[in-house]
Length: 315
Length: 81
Image (cartoon, rainbow over all chains, first blue to last red; front, side, top):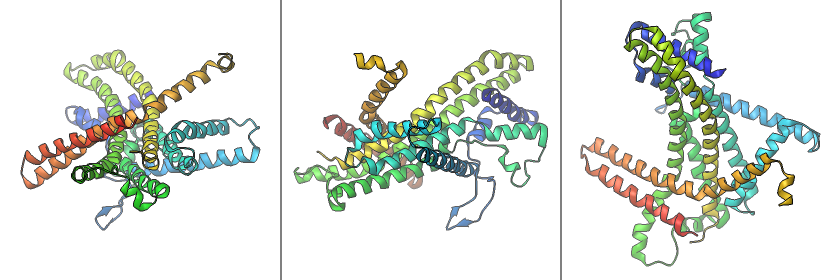
């Protein structure tokens, strides 16, 4: 159902662009994927050069955080109150998820001694990223735009609502969001190493012991850069993967308007949409469902691997 | 064998998937770090070039450094075993 709505809202927004000027696929796609920071929902003043305005991705982050907090707290409390024997499906599902993260992500990498310390962090990462990715698949703002086109008919400059009518919904497709998550990973790595081996030893463990001193001149900068590159790789990977899927979907939908314009006939566009765009977009949406799971999994797995590397040092 | 037959097909395939995913951890790390190092240090080099107008020297140096650091991380993962 969402696919059709996504397609419909895509057509409306693209159609509106086509009314005034020739259809520009690149511009339309970028408008849908970007955060639209120049036109935030609520504009707030800058504090020390940092723009605190509430953009769509900020709104989505809050929404995701609220959903995760309310759902998980409610499920876990009810599960604890009823005991493990009662049949409460969300409770069983949450328990399975927790077990999966603990047994097959954290335990093999971090080790039995520290598994209870680091499972909560990794589990939070997984649930948060997965929820953000999944909500990103639902074209909330595009549906709003579609509804606005037919029902509300609000102006695009209307205070809060009008600003919600364009742009993307996937908070994890924003590099700033994934960078924030990766910074948490970065500091967790340092804290994990310091807790397990002591603060001084953690920094000593960065390079292998007992080598000739000229090697250290090369090795220490390389290791320090490696330390910074790990969170960077996490940042790029998650955001790029989430953006990529959306661009592919939008490009397929743009094909309808490009062909319609090229042949100066709406019929060609509709035919191309039915034969090419719609089946491919549905297929890619299905693929995206796997991608959101895999990306959340890879982020948490890599976090666990990095934490495990500094705890169990053996050069 | 008899133990496995007690589980459903789904449970067994899930367990196998888990096991395989778990083993991919270090390999995934090496791959992403190699790419990340080249992109990050190359990007820093590009930025310095654009800022100081020294194209292409810092970009080349950044890419080279990225390859070195990336392969150093890769080597660490390979020789850990």
